[in-house]
Length: 212
Image: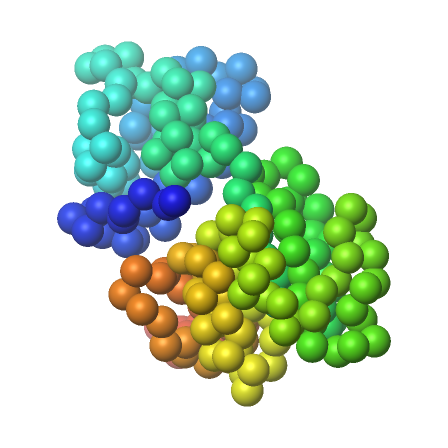
């Protein structure tokens, strides 16, 4: 059962924490034992005050004049994000995008494992992928519930995405990474992250030529 999200912590702060973990881990692996908030800010691209403010939501870290113990802070934030355990993930859609997600090498060293893959194409059902086989989307809810999966990835066309989201949520999924170009309607306790490259590009074109 996932813990309840702390409502008083801004979502933008949570979104920055994985960047802190990645940066601190790289520093620790490079034998940097201690890091100041100023140095960490330079690495990440935010202000030192922002880093101190972000960390203050979760307790006291570091010592005046000595900065942060790099490895200890990395481990502390890892625990805050609950990345000190493995999270099984359900993937819906095994087209070109789903295939790329399932074969993404970044899953290997991460805290996430694709534990079930679903597709509505009967020609793909039963196709093996490593230690699992692609399942029919008809058994999505029951299989997600059986495996205790709380995280889902949607990589289906927009017209199918809401139905897939509903099936995942009925199975117990509480967090969804959505690649479909549609805004999903979900209960308040279900968190959705939208990954739409066209939307991202559209937010960038505004700045092209500005100030030139």
